[in-house]
Length: 273
Ligand SMILES: Nc1ncnc2c1ncn2[C@@H]1O[C@H](COP(=O)(O)OP(=O)(O)OP(=O)(O)O)[C@@H](O)[C@H]1O
Ligand SMILES: Nc1nc2c(c(=O)[nH]1)N[C@H]1C(S)=C(S)[C@@H](COP(=O)(O)O)O[C@H]1N2
Image (tube, rainbow, N blue to C red):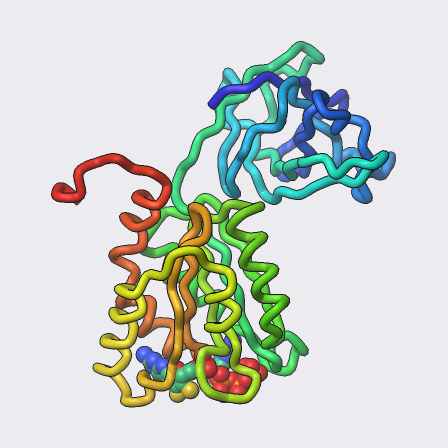
């Protein structure tokens, strides 16, 4: 997918954050709480067409190579509007930054991952969360990751449901893996929140995790972890301890890449995969 943009006057440097907005629906003039005159990092790259649907981690290449990457997506409030926008991370400065229009090409590379730790103690800073970072490390050793982001939430099902919906349908992460809250403690509600968010269930992933867990510990039977899809995102619950994360992930890691490709519409023949 290719689209035309104008670069801002401010010089773009690697690491800077910019906004990508469209000038078709008044987006270029809408208000942003991040817009501070003394923060040139929030300069705007303006797209001269309706904003394309871009998933988390997508690279945008200019004529000379990679320019920036989609970090976050949302809406800007403004005169009775809520205009879509993307936050971009500059990965390489353009060779020549002029006001002339520039063609950008969207390129997907690797998998984008969001992990979510459900832990009352973790969210209050009473225990270091090592389970979320373990997910990122384990997935990253098996697949190249274009982008990885982590979140720590208390065991609150509505907050989780809202975050899962946003990560899948607004941000467009390929994988959203949760840890914690799958058991029987009074505040364990991760499976219920996940069931309320997903469109299709993946019973094979759930079965694979249960079988692999039971081979390690009879307590594997206590996890009620759910797996499924929402939009083009795969969502999987993992139990809370780092040990359980490793043991459960090991059972589904080999199938995650192919499952994600199929979900995003890969038409290739499965017999060769
Ligand atoms: N995010 C985490 N990071 C590190 N260790 C964890 C994490 N979650 C759980 N554990 C470990 O697994 C054990 C059992 O987890 P459990 O789900 O029962 O957590 P909890 O302490 O009861 O509740 P919560 O994590 O919701 O505050 C914990 O005592 C801790 O040792
Ligand atoms: N593979 C594996 N699965 C496991 C465990 C484990 O150590 N290894 N722990 C179990 C335990 S003790 C519990 S209580 C449940 C639920 O954990 P959670 O509430 O932290 O999600 O996961 C279970 N699944």
